[in-house]
Length: 135
Image 1 (cartoon, rainbow, N blue to C red):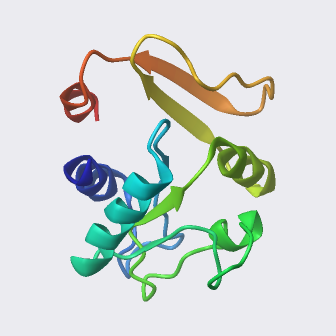
Image 2 (tube, rainbow, N blue to C red; image 1 turned 90 degrees about the horizontal axis):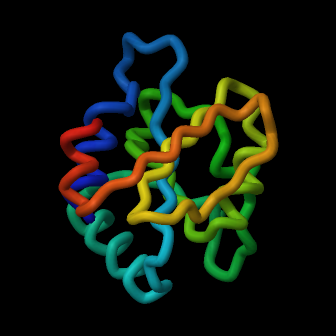
């Protein structure tokens, strides 16, 4: 999973000083247990991979406006991690720029959207490594 996060970040993050509007992708991993998610975040943090997750301090509730804040190149943030489907939906609703969701799944969609202004691509895969070939 970490390798996929690194690849997604490398291909889609635009955080250099030359970028007039720095950007990094949002990532939601459906079906990952809270324990696995914490372990993944811990690994990323220990490797110096900067991310935000919408929790401003210990014990805080998720803040969609916080995770959706515009980046600067000096932040060094390479990805924005969403813990739950509810957090994903809340974040999509506060983003005012172009929004496109790429949903990779193993046979069954886990997200159905009714907002016509939101781009949505549902891509069925057989194994996680398929995502590398697609992106």
